[in-house]
Image (cartoon, rainbow, N blue to C red; front, top):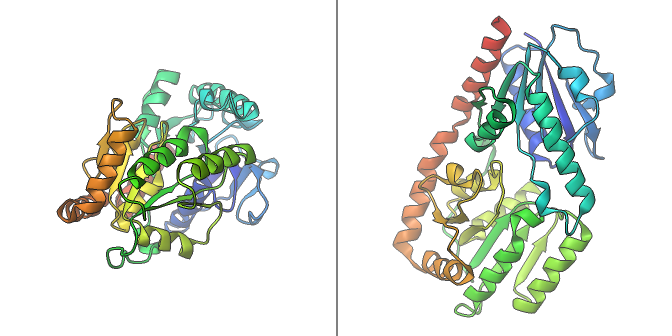
Length: 347
């Protein structure tokens, strides 16, 4: 069997690119052929691993897998009425989060959602990396959509290590972008720090724009001077150290199509406090403390105090996080993907 993968954009630290490469590793393991292409590639992407989309010369019956994550020219031509094809939606952030601070990003999001709707009516099969994404596809297309979670390979991660010591450390990992609401994380942390003056906050993520990073840095300096650390790009080893030293992972995002850092937090035994929005609740399950719409900054700060200070609760959340990872077992997800592709290839 031969499967060609298409990405809207590829980057050296991009989660969707990593998923495509993980899929390719499985295809090679299964003895399947094919190559991978991207409409846009950032510097640092190996051209032999991810080729330019212009180099794709697909036969009419060639099997193709599209990892959709944003607008890219020419995809309609490639996938219109292509029976042997699968579109996996990694989600498009709604444009409303960007109009005020990054109008160009907002336009790209609008175009992406329009293109996704059009593509979803022409490809062979639809899937989302979460039930949230799959439901969006159903509403867009009027068709069924499967759920194929992200491939999460725990064997590639180092062990969790001992529980953290030192000053209480709050961690969030994710792109510094308006919909991820690092501004609320900073505000909640500042309120918590009034009760715990030695607490520290670490925000790891590439900024959406210099202007947005600057706004977050000014807010941190105003509310919690000297206590907030920004890391825009870290090595994997450095990232794992941040997880090991964290006492709690705080996610106040208003929109996430999946959120892999939640699984990483579970792996490293970091208790999770998260807003139940978009796909976050389905990823967390019962393994973290989920916040409702009525929970404000004061409630979040109090939860941080409780989770950091209650030894028994921390142990219970660590155990639940470990159990929750079974739902995203790599072998189980790989088998879902294999069956989906084999079934489509047989039709």
